[in-house]
Image (tube, rainbow, N blue to C red; front, side, top):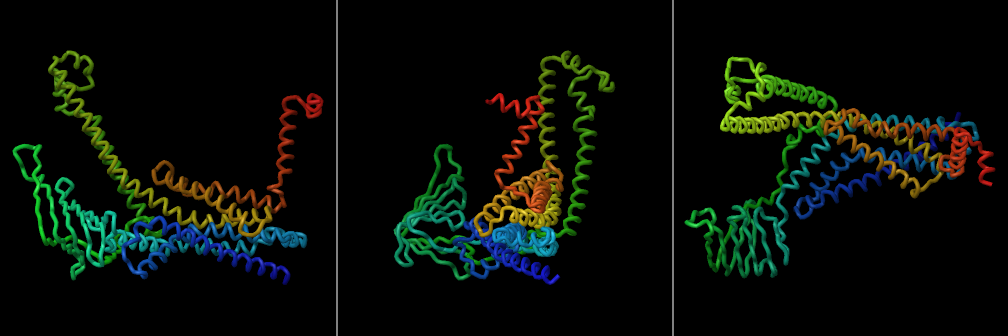
Length: 495
């Protein structure tokens, strides 16, 4: 019994070390990918390191559900690959310990990780995602740090493009300013030999002082006798001061901005939102159907009868032959009827488009909430699936280190991510049900995990070429026997 306990402790210790190491590596890689994705939103904004550190903490929290399954896959694959490569796994099996008994402590540990991952996704992840996107939105809308480059256009001022040919300390030389704040057709162009730029005391405006230059301004809005003549105003100046709106302070948006989004809710809140949105979708659907039944498509009012010039408006519409009524009209009446029909068809098309928008928005919102509800469970279950893929696969291939296990893990995770993303889009677009799209990746990978576990328990040589050659030969013999050509006859025929 003490021998078994020592084996359990030994395997747990090796697995935990690799799990922590691979988890940190995966988090770092995903965090660099996040930084690269939002590089343009963060660079040149002049925000403090404390704000960036806070953003990275929130980003790390949001990446945990994605990094944990990959870390479990890689850690389990490396653990059992190392045990198989050093023949420790063989020694354990020769001592009468089965594979299921060897991985039992890890199964218990992974079970706790799965439960913890669910509570993390349900309680911590929504707040982290809400805070991260709120902070990222605030940074994105902050004015860039005032640093005018030389030899290229600077567009950090709203509606203004500034070009500078040279700098001498705080003096800008050879300035060209294109001001489109009043619209492109009413642009103002300023040229100056030199100038300087500074923030006002309240840091809400930018004061641009120009020396020895000219300004050109379009006056397209002023009416002229001829539309081909566009007036403009030209002005020469020795000194000119221009004031632009420029808020350099960092204004953090309120977290309630994303409070109603599906990414900011837990299971309980998502369930309530789904029920509320479902009622809205149902009410709008019923009202639109009733409207179509009453007037738009199947109804037929007296006004429409008169438009078709029916001889007896009091007579039921179903008693008339439409083709005969149409042919018996005069040319003027036919033209009026055709125009009326085209106008009515256009109105019906516009109304269908409007109804589709009214119904599509809450339907899309409900799909997103339903997909997020299932994601809370599917991401946690993925941790268990990846463990039962990595552990038996490592016992089969018997390759440790970072080389082969990393390649296998990345390929497997890419397959999982593509399937999961496809299922999510199908669920969001209402092509599939939410549970079908969000559990698609688990449904595909779970049989693979069961198959690999079975093969590892039977000590199967999954990657041995001779096994597949023998299998192919058996299939070939069965096919030959089925078509009435035994293997011996095939051999004689070939001779």
